[in-house]
Length: 209
Image (cartoon, rainbow, N blue to C red; front, top):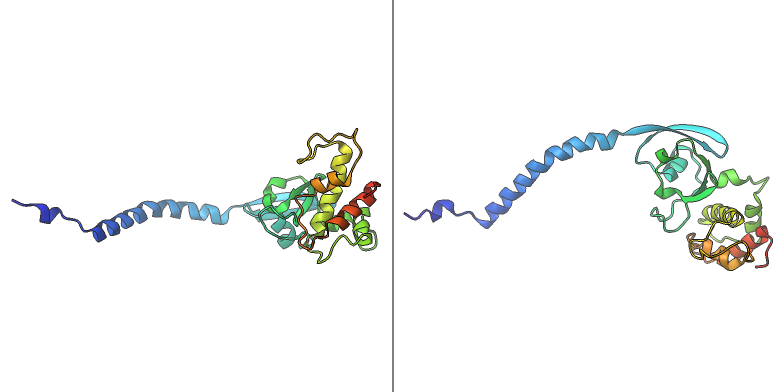
């Protein structure tokens, strides 16, 4: 007796059956994971520009979005949102970071300084004043991140921290604009005002550009 007719399965039937099995298998896992991902919040308290701020945030909120969307400190800019342009640079406990790459909940108890905390129109930070003096900006979109990074770079050099590009630099060697440019390489200016930015940093550092 030929049983091939009863055992034959069409290609279409196999695909449909397989897809249904995958859907049935995956559905419980997706359903179980969705509520946890959507509703997870945590309290976070940090000092921002000298003022203690407490927030309850979705655990997926970046520090950049916490500053811009929750604290309305829009001086810090969202550029690439992938840590590649430096427009979102802020200072965390005096060290520069790309705030788009850092979760806000990681900064419990930290001290955050944004461009608003460096100076005011009536009392500019020396780096802000130098950027104005040397025309270190054009469209200005990257400028807050450039200034925050520039302030941190001079502090890094003063502290003797090695450059990610020239790790062999020591403070026995004279400070050069080449070193400052290398340390600033993570901050992109699409207008191309790099020479003016270097001049502003050299002015604050007290070296010849």
